[in-house]
Length: 214
Length: 214
DNA sequence: GTCTATACATGGATAGAC
DNA sequence: GTCTATCCATGTATAGAC
Image (tube, rainbow over all chains, first blue to last red; front, side, top):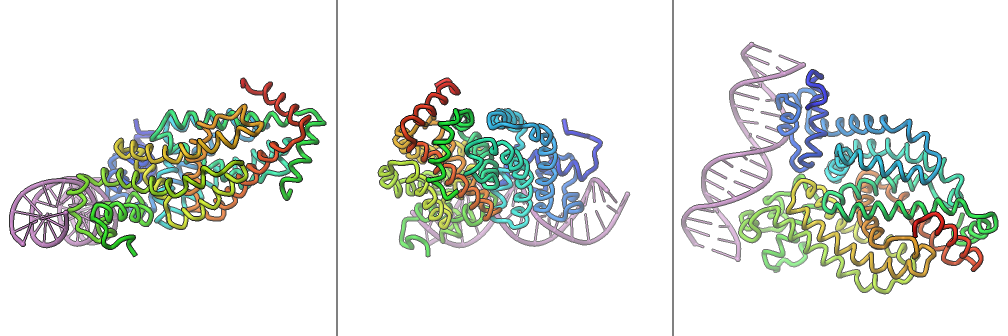
């Protein structure tokens, strides 16, 4: 069941930390529960990581790099907003299943009051943000929005919202699904603006220029 | 410092729970820490609420009703998307200051693995969702989007994203501000579509109808 | 590197005095 | 309704044997 039964203790603990966070939440994640999940002795947490916080911080990096790496190539191939939306939805299902986004949610909650964790969580999120940002720059360029939207900010909004919706799904599955559907629909609307005829395009761009300080 | 020093013990505990959640997070919220924040004896948590979970559940309802009530009238007066955006931003500042959204974030994290808390948190969020939904129905009706967007789903997306961004702000303040700016800008763009001339309006609507199953 | 044992702190929960 | 005292489980962290 554990990824590698013969893996090094460090890896077992990192993996145990991730699993404990998803299954029991930050509130019940401790050296003991993590060690139990990892199948190793509790004292090894302190031998290898010095403290529980440090273990969680490294687990955050470990888990996020693993995940982002898994999607990097596919993200690089996305060239339209609707593709991005479809991908986001699919990734949501996969990661939800495995509880990987939930980990970020738990760490984010814990990080609010623990500087060490905060730094690690910010770093973990920034891995996602960097990828999303690259895609957004590419995808929005061909859209009337390219001129007015800020991909840097939007990437952060997307990542944070993704985590928020993930947490929301934990308490209201139907609501979360409906939320995702609504966003998908909204995205399709924006994507459609891309395909307006030249006259309408010009009218839209003109109106947007007036409305924003772009 | 405490809201009412002479308040009943129940209220002191509810208030102490909220303050403890914001200041120490769900991971360090216990009968003892809450009682200390409330300035009452630890045993009273169990006398009045039976368990810590139950206290937190009631605190969630208590805090959320208080907050939503405070904004209900103003929300009812909002009649355009840009007004809604401005209001959201202002509310964000105020609630951030007091840490009230953070409470929902902490509870949401804790709720992932505690059914009792999950129900309470879902109920709390639904108070916000209901208000946002009413505004969205009203505001989107006059927009090309009214025909294609789902206010029920969007309200949930907005509420969940708000919490997500709030948590994100705890680990990356600059990033969160930029995210909010980007969303505000995006909202302004959508709002601008509202003011297109009749010809462009028709072109947009036509294109959107083709693009969605609306 | 890993385990046992152990210290000491914190947390959940109850009994009983006031 | 509130407080003191207490029990027992859990959690952090270290020392020392293997």
